[in-house]
Amino acid sequence: MMNRIFRPVWVGALTLLATAALGAPEPLPPAAPPCYRVRYAPSKTSGELVYGVSYTAWIPPGVTTLRGVIVHQHGCGEGACRAGQTAAFDLHWQALARKHACALLGPSYEQPEKADCGLWCDPRNGSEQTFLKALDELAAKSGHPELARVPWALWGHSGGGCWAGTMLMLHPDRSAAIWLRSGLPRFVPRDGSNQPPLAIPAAAYAVPVMCNLGTLEGVTVMTGRFARVWQSVEPFFKEFRAVGGLIGVAIDPHSSHDCGNSRYLAIPWFDACLTARLPDRAGDTALKPMPTTGVWLAPFPGGVPQPAAQFAGDAKDAVWLPDERIAHAWYEYMKDGNVKDLTPPPAPTQVQLAGQELTWAAEADLESGLASFIIERDGAELARVPAHPAGSIGRQVFQRTGYSDTPTPPLPEMHFTVAAATNAVKHRYAVRSVNSVGLKSPPTAAAP
Image (cartoon, rainbow, N blue to C red; front, side, top):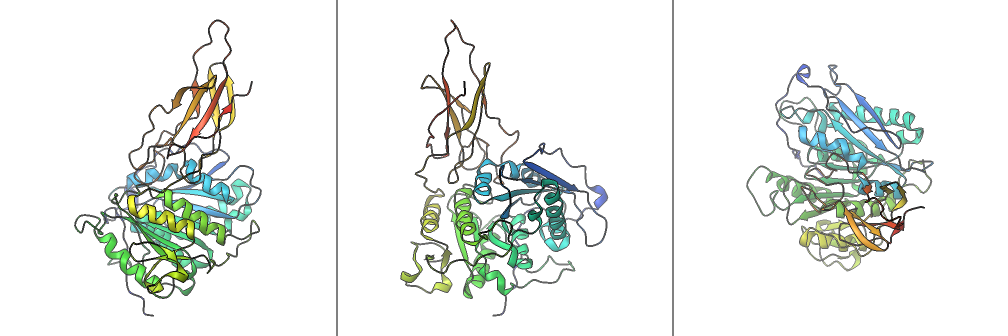
């Protein structure tokens, strides 16, 4: 089949600034084990990355050998680059990484607002080799040599979607699954670039891909800055699916170019794909093929999903979904931008009371993350932390998710100051976790 030529979708101005004009990087959140970080200065050498970049990796505590790397790649512009600084600290994405014994990697490029995003979001402009170098160095720093060679799952927003999709074209055999939020692979560079066009390699069609965008990006609103997103997604989907490629489309009925509530579908989708594809033996590199049984299909671009064997239409025109669980979640997301969750979050751990300071640790609910904590005294609710969950985009959660699907700094801490005891009365304190749909964990009492 002849590949069409697609133009990438990303945001950020396309005016190239001289490397000398790049400002100094902003301070990053501290990285101490289980987090590790490497940074590379901008390069003036032809073919190398012209922007500075930092990579922060979170390694699940207790994991002896990693099975993969989950990359959460931000989009274009200064704001998106700053958002990338907290990606590796996201408790919800960490829950996915923990379940599959994967590292969680958050890059943060130092691209000025009016500089050319294509100089990093096309991996061939130096970011591919810098990323691979970072994996090598992080492998050495973390004491996990397998980090340099295990498969990866790539999530990308806008220009990050361009980067993630193009990395699929360059490394299909290493790509476990690809989520493209409002961005696509770079099949042909911007006018004036000396990079050759890219075609879809045959191996890429066997990699699960989800194209995700907001309805305001050209689906129901055909004008404005982001209307061209759908104009690019639709032909890309049809090209990929026409030869049996494992690709779906998920349209958020409320959002525009922001990430909305997409994580509540993206994380379960990655969970299904990683469960099917990661090698059984940690440290191995050969990915397993996606199963051909249990697949569900849905009319494009939306409709009621069905088991593939019962689908009445042309399968090569249909949205591909890996299994029944994801098919139901996809349908819910397409209807109202949310995904149901009927299971409570894990209970907090390490609950301690030292003087008046109550502290604890908590893992996020894989399906719905963490919204808040309930502090109980003598079995009755005393307070909530935070008192009023916040967030500029999507559900109100503990870490205040923003436009780019990353926590908003400063990152909150898990602690609460209790009132001083009076009349020598000793109280019993406990903590519950609450996920983003309001379900509560059992209480964990403070250790005496």
